[in-house]
Image (cartoon, rainbow, N blue to C red; front, side):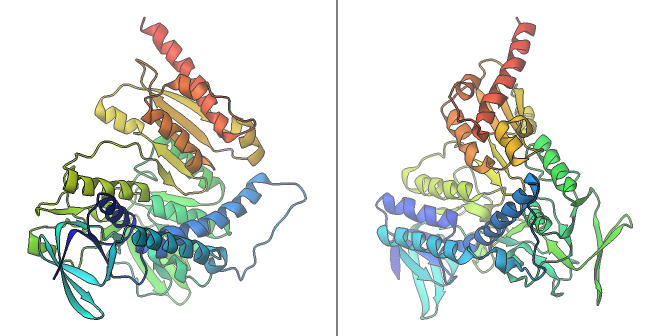
Length: 465
């Protein structure tokens, strides 16, 4: 039996950050990982493969959007997803190396195997050499999540994929149905759209990207529709029929669509099987997620959870912050402070947000005004041909303090960090409007959106004085 100050289960973004934070505090740490490589499924089968695929697709879409006279291109009919992910291994190797260097730097012991709870301070780990018993003052569960497989979908058919199996495709489909209009569904729909597939997206809800700004989500849907994607919203799924000629996906209203590939992106489930959480009195919800409080504590004393395994819209940056906060709560008794964390969705075009949406501000009862700027009216946007891009700023009418920025358009995932810093500093519309931005640049959209917001503020101020 070996004792540590902290035991971490899972080496994805939340687990790796939790282990590093504890080591920086001078604690002894063991990191338990059952996969051959550190980094979690996001690196191996999720984030890196899908974003590598998306980056090449974005290049193809950029060529199409610019529509340069005399320049044409042809997609090889033999093109495969693996061809578009040719840089994947380079990225994976670099990420694996970075995680391993951090583990070595902080002298974190890595234990390979499947962990299960004996009590709130004891894990039994099944390794290839046999069982090991580890004890810890605190334990962080960061085992992540996997693709949810709804009942009634014939996953045994090789033409049916969940989002984690995209790398296994040996060809691009001609006709694709995507089940789910959330983050993963729309990211992958955009990829297949860019290589000429006929794409239909089916979503039970009334809108796409339910957790994002509704105006930007609507603009994204219209952008994708202009490129040939069909959306069926607000109808429950019926039967998925299989046959030698392909698949037929039916809705309960009687409509159906034929396809040769079905991609299911219908949410995620927490990776909690095999942990024996019941032994410590922790019950997961229907989706396998672990309930925690505001300090990422479970009901078991000394046991914390962070990242995708606790559910919610957990981007990698959010997961890392949760892992760090859980450790500081465990050893420093800190209450996590609210952090301004960007949320980026790598659709085509991409969506980036920092701060609450309009709906969230309404629910909080917080007054706000809106400024808007169209990418199509920006010189750099005109050069790139981005006709659907939109930037919104939400700000407090009392003092013009910036509350949120929502960005639809290429480059948003990089440029949103300007808004992040302004919001963290308690900045105002004037702070967005005053800096001299390069010309032509997408960054100058901050000046445009700020001046539009100031116009609305001046009218509001005149009305209320």
